[in-house]
Amino acid sequence: MLKMICRLTAMALVIITLDCNAETLASYAQACASELGFDPSQIPILNCNNGIRFATGGPLNDYVGHESFYGINRDSIDLVFACRWMDKNTPSTTAVSVEMLIHNKTSGNTCFFAAKDSSNNRVISASGAIVSTEIVSPYDANAASYWMQPIDLNNRTFVVQNVSPNPRLQCVGCHVAGPYIASPRIAPFLAQFGLLNDGHDTLANPSMRRYHAVGSNRSFSAFWGWDTIVANNNVPSVVINNNPSSSICANGCHSIGLKSTASGISDDQRGFSVIPSLQEDISDIADAHVMPANASPTSDYRWVNMSTPFLLGDGGEYEMLGDLQQLYPNFFCSNPSRIEAHVVGSDRVFSNVQGSDTFHYFNLQDGLVCLNADQPNGKQCEDYQTRYLCDGTWTDWSSRDRPTASGDWEPRRGFPGLCESPTAIQAGYNLNIDIGIFQLSIPITLNGPNDRLAEFDSNGLACNNWEQDSGRCSDYVARFICE
Image (cartoon, rainbow, N blue to C red):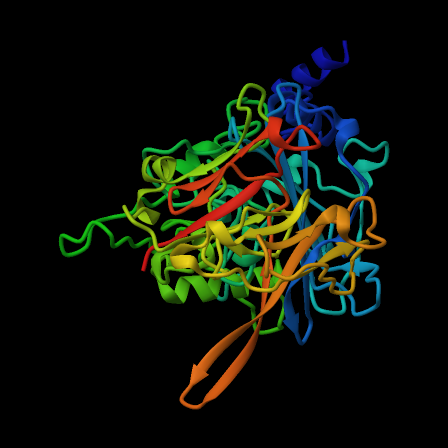
């Protein structure tokens, strides 16, 4: 009955624009869980202070955070939040703005949330931080007091000098080339979380799947048509001077698209802006005009996350060169000089050429063993010591063996007083270099992988779930160095 009254009223009074079917925050959040395939109870307690600080200086105190969880089909789902201009307290209690998205990297389905902040009152400044850093789940009973309603998020505007009315700041005006705005400042942290090149359209490659904004295909949704905005503003790579390896994306396709509604964000004369430091990220990449992904063989943009060990039937984790050629040809070369890898969430990078010896094994589950018989030209193993990360603190170095017999044996079971669940392993040795009549001794520290790897060489990384004590490999991110 109420629905009928609303419709009749709207018909009788043209000035009424309220649609009784308009999407609420609660209905949008439920659609998000349904389309991405997760249980809302899986969302953990979130706090801006648990993220990683990616921007500092002056009023800047910006954090990015990440959580992974798994849906009904065990597809990997990523929740990412950005908290900008947090206060300088430890821990910070407020921020100028908090944005969050949840993305299913397999289906591409993505939903967007933004906290109610002072932009609703057209006033934002460093002293205007009013958003709590204790992030409320969109499924919490009081979620509507923390998050903007979908229609308010869609209608949000930003300030441009001498432009009236203010243009809209729709999320997909910034999030064009994939769900994440990977400016040079934040890209290393997104790579650490395994969020770059993980199946979504990071490179604006027209052959790849574009991500889908939840609500974009429902006429009653505030986000109706957002997929069209993405498609129209996404700029693919192009060939320059007959060079297929060159690619250009106006305004930077790792950040915003050519026609992005966010391309004009700027402070007005009063010093106000809509999303304070986001504007600086966009300005930095807009000035460059060229996607920086291929700028360096060791660029952070080259990290790829093509596989996950959590998918049923996969049997493990595989980041292989052949898959790179198919999925990310811009990063491919037929004979890479080395491969580097790290576990999602870790900044400890290890490489297949980081040590001078061939290891029989070197991993967190077993420790380190180097066999003299495995070394070329009769070379003897170096003398290694090992240490482990326990509860955020490295143990002392320990060396129980010397490589005088069969090799150097530093197994985990021989480490004194080791905690039950160390989270990282390092090995150290001294590299002796002859310089004329002098010998220089350089200390070398190596990071080891979490798991027993079936392969880790220029062809890629392979890890079998069945070979691990836990029954499952870690989720690795890799990059191939083509020099």
